[in-house]
Amino acid sequence: MLAALDLMKTKLSIDEILNQTFFGLDTLAMLGDVEHFIEFSESNITWQKQCEYRRAERECDEKEFDDPSMEAQYRDQMLEGVLYRFNVGLAQRIRYAGLTALITTIEWCLFSLKNVGSGLAFCFLGKPDL
Image (cartoon, rainbow, N blue to C red; front, side, top):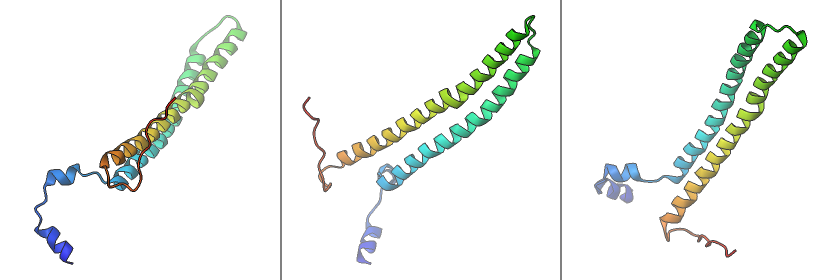
């Protein structure tokens, strides 16, 4: 109770409060953002894939060829290209971006902890000699 009264008597600076790092809350927010980024991006890819696939089908339907085998080959190439781009290429890039964001978040947390100073119960090792 006395500690709470002492805190009430202390003049708090709004700049100090806003610039204070709260490791647990900051880290949870950043990790949650990484999760939301991946979920949003993957759902957006699904939606965009459907739109692009329909567009490619319309383009294939409008294209006329003298040789029917060329038409089938063109259709297969266009539609498989759309599926590959969205199922493999973009999905892989989003997961790599999510992994990079996760690693960066952990790095920021460790950097902040390292800069806290002597209040830590552990010490960071130096770079190994190669």
